[in-house]
Amino acid sequence: MRNLFKRESKVEQYSKEHVDMVYESLNQLKILMEHFYNNEFDKVDKKVDKISKLEHDADDIRRKMEIEFFNGAFLPFDREDRIILAENVDSVSDMCQETAFGICLSRINFPKGYIEDFSDLMDSIYKTVTALKKCIELLDEDLGEALKKAHEVEKLEDEVDKIERRILKRLYISYKNQEIDILTHIEIKSTVLRLGNIADLAENASDRVPIIVAKRKG
Image (cartoon, rainbow, N blue to C red; front, side, top):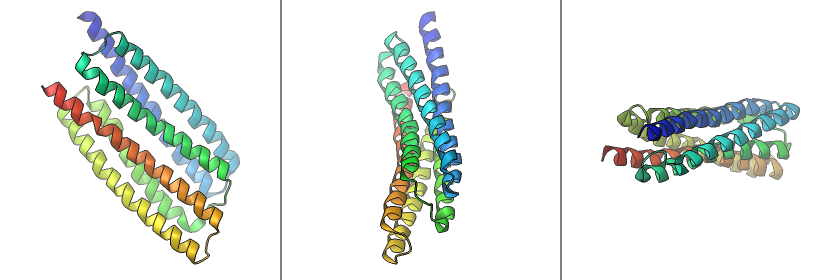
């Protein structure tokens, strides 16, 4: 029994380290976006490298967690949900990397009139992932509060959807009015959709929390 608790403690520590790295991936993406607004692609490239390193390190920690599960950490009914939760959290980091790489490849001049819209989008995504981070931290401290945070993630993701749709609608109007060219329209639209997917994936991760809470409560 002592070994079981020791393994669970190690997984809990890995889980905190893992979500911290995923969160830092978003932090770095937020800085990258500031460089994108100013068309500073040399700085964008450096941030892509940083985000890729964080994504790789997050994968390493997730694999360590999976090994501990294989070795018997947590009871069998809890392991599957924990593994799925870790994989879903990891997908947030994957999407941060995909978004950064897409921006790096596009090399388009960012339309200055969209900076405020994108700032609103990034702030909303940031709040969503921050709530997910807190939700996971609470999972091993207070199940009731973890459940509340999971519901908060869902509400925050709805706000991201609203801003995403607002930007997409404006993009189509700008293109039809010949205010932006087709390449800019396509690349900015792709970036918006990828950014929105970060919040979607955060919500997918939070959806696993009520299941874990219900099983824990018995």
